[in-house]
Length: 293
Image 1: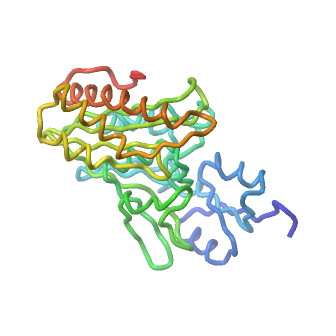
Image 2 (image 1 turned 180 degrees about the horizontal axis):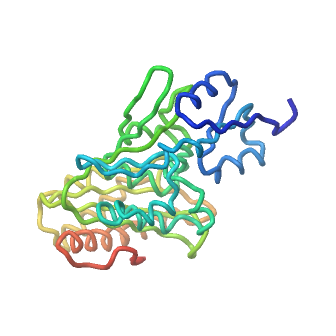
């Protein structure tokens, strides 16, 4: 087979998609295609079959039932921004989505594609980790629900098994909470994160903190959570928490930033994000959509 020659299929149902995959030697899934097309062009992957999921209507669903949010595999970042369910129940998801690349990319790229690519600088991974989401897959042995903390194994490596398709993610609402997503980039537009961070402030006085782009996989900052949970947030406690960031994350130096700069900015982002999440929990704070960095 000549380089970059492959079959193409656009099934209308999940079972049809699974059947096509089972009969292919090296199938690849196309949702938005913003990563896959580049990888094919550059010869990074050589599929024998590309399976386009955009024909499966179920994958375009955003639902909120029994205090649980479901985002289908085909939902784009633009659709997350426009969703009334997201605006009302999880406005921080819309905040994150607005920071993804450009309008053209957001019109095609999906959250599920983002977590399947599993690059360290992805934006969706830290958010799903903080919300303790489950990644839902379908395959030859049926459906699996995989906690986010077990989904990401290494850079570009996930817990998906051969023959499986990710159908969506499920997020159980933590109840009333304030949230804040902070992303550091070199400029506005199609830049990847140097550091990203999400903080959830829950009504019971506990917090969830998750970092991205500072390790091979998203980092749930459990040491920081243990330190601040249930305690008044004072300047001295925040200072101690910032010191713990040095133990939680493992930034590297690359073309976008030095490890020292990433570490320094992560501390500033944490302090600002924490204050914003607490203020939003209490009905104040900066409006969602405001850039804090």
